[in-house]
Length: 133
Image 1 (tube, helix red, strand yellow):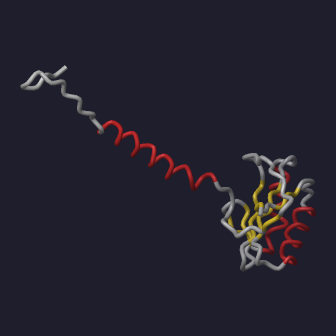
Image 2 (cartoon, one colour; image 1 turned 180 degrees about the horizontal axis):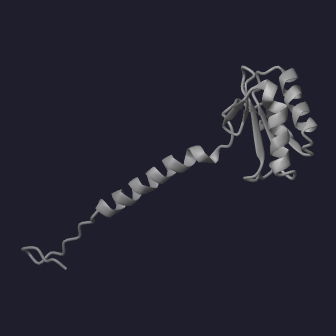
Image 3 (tube, one colour; image 1 turned 90 degrees about the vertical axis):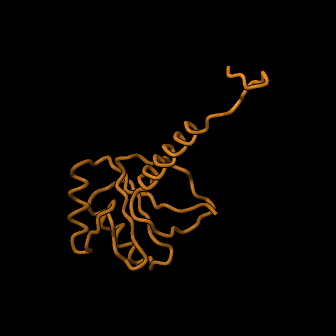
């Protein structure tokens, strides 16, 4: 204890360690947050009856943007190479689940074509991702 001139107790709080911890936590959240989302960011359709299903890290995330471009994970795949690419992914692990993220402003014909390519590649489980209303 540090007694001042008049015999008083000095009670100052050192906030430097607190600020250091807060800055480290902020940096960790800034680095980890972009990694939480799988696939490419799209505007998902809404549904009143959507079921929450926990995804696995091994799931194959296929994203279809508004302009019709298809991404598997973060990789852009041309339409002509999509069936062959999906077949090679199926051959790596046949138990994977396909998670389909399609922009709600997209024509459904494109979604149907991607689903057909996944079905032709012999994936047995395809889930369409939506947001709850």
